[in-house]
Image (cartoon, rainbow, N blue to C red; front, side, top):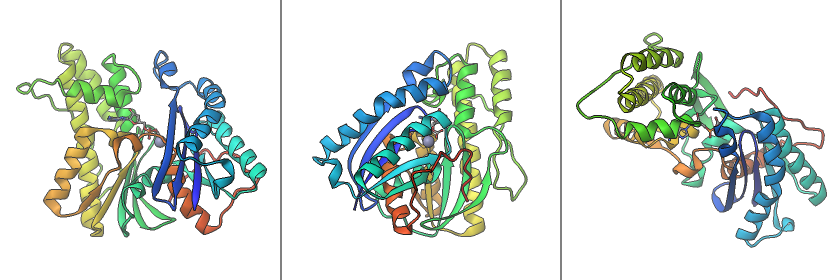
Length: 329
Ligand code: KG4
Ligand code: ZN
């Protein structure tokens, strides 16, 4: 079964063709992120306008790459939410029109659940598992029992992990998105000068996160040590990663699951991979992280989850509108 996935929730216009929820036949990601850089964040109206221009080329590219025609598609999957309303509207309207014209089934997917399915492009998901979603807008930990069943265990009480990187980067005068900038700068940190930032601890058994404190602490540290940008970037990165791995470790102990799946833009971070791979080695728990290109927004993950949504029979009709906000689990 070949699914055309479409993603337009933020500033990436993406299309992909995925076979049977696991084999990626083609993927195209067109980003408007360069246009948003000067504003220090995504401008919703600009993102929506760019989607309207990029969506047809993105879909045409994947059809060409997969040597397919529209008629060869068995179904369409589109991101229903959460995300920017105008941006989602472009992808959904396009997907609905295509489904009606081709008379193919259409399913809507949850953007964050889709992030997890980037892992299904590598190998089949093994249940039960823990799932950690770390993106620009969310930091959430789930018990993942089976396809279609995610139970929320904990989430951020304030900023998301990606937001901590984005805000920290802004404090240090770096550009948007901040995560990759912080990672790059942290690599230039001085080995001898170790600056440390505090990580919020929300009680012994809590599986929630809090990243607003680290932002304020970054600001204070930068005021005290304006010459030590790289060391502060490393301290911020280490503080965020420590909070993530400590909470996952606590949940793993509580639930005893042997599989951990990570997903979302922040998992593109190379140091995050090291920290979690080390955790896996120490505990014997299997840690899965998608290849970096499928950590940030893409449509391959939408096509992969679309396969399972289609199996469940929950089809979207032509009156469907974006769901934002849209809670998961
Ligand atoms: O999942 P995503 O592409 O979009 C959302 O759904 O939010 O995540 C974007 C977030 C941004 O906050 C960005 O700074 C962060 O992911 N990010 C990173 C890295 N690459 C992207 N954070 C840390 N290190 C990276 N290499
Ligand atoms: Zn995302």
